[in-house]
Image 1: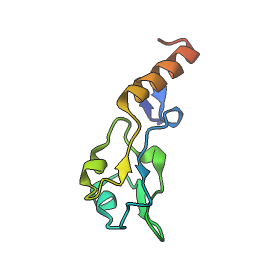
Image 2: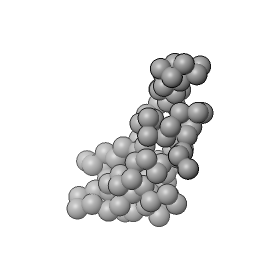
Image 3: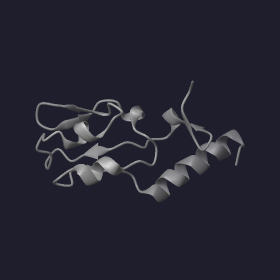
Image 4: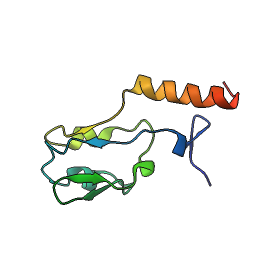
Amino acid sequence: MKKTYLGVPREEIPWYPHINADLCTLCGACKEFCPNDVFEAGVECMLVKNPMNCVVACDKCAAECPIAAISFPDKAQLLKWVEEAKSKKGTT
């Protein structure tokens, strides 16, 4: 079954964490916290291994990062993406 968010296919929504490699210390707190297998340890920093596994609108892992190396798009941008996708399909 295909995942959707407000009627929009998940793969059309670029909502996933971004890791600031200059800040990341490879502590793994994000990987331990996230049950969706989004993260993996890289050589120099954590990596977003499975971005489409991230639950749309969830940003809880960012609060788990002890040095604030994780960021997400603004939630207003998320709503804009959803509305744009719906209007392209004529389902607003």
